[in-house]
Length: 117
Image 1 (tube, rainbow, N blue to C red):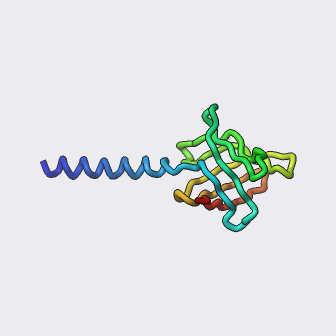
Image 2: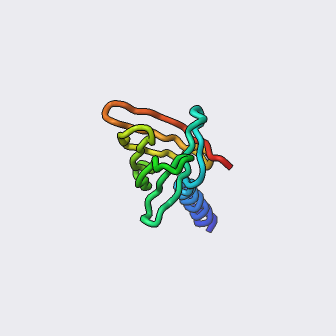
Image 3: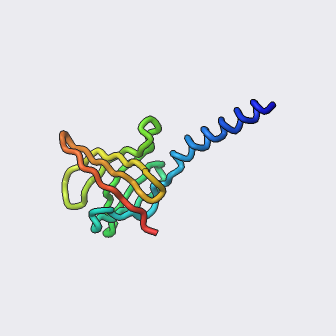
């Protein structure tokens, strides 16, 4: 009897830990941790994808979708002042911090975003 209870509690703890990692929401307003001028508001659209726009309302992040295998969101980034797109991966680190990694060919750029309350 005691072994059953311990096994059940252990399984519940493991399941809670796994699901808690995926429960961090990326929606909301974010600013750059080091690049203070960087501002992105991330929202979920009717098509099921996440998008992000800057303060001027220009779309920066496009078609972000959660990739369970990578435990991250993947999509495209189009800087408003450039005419190119980057593959982007968002890694939710905590409820208030996101690691954003952009890649184009051999170039990789990493930014951290902090949630604005």
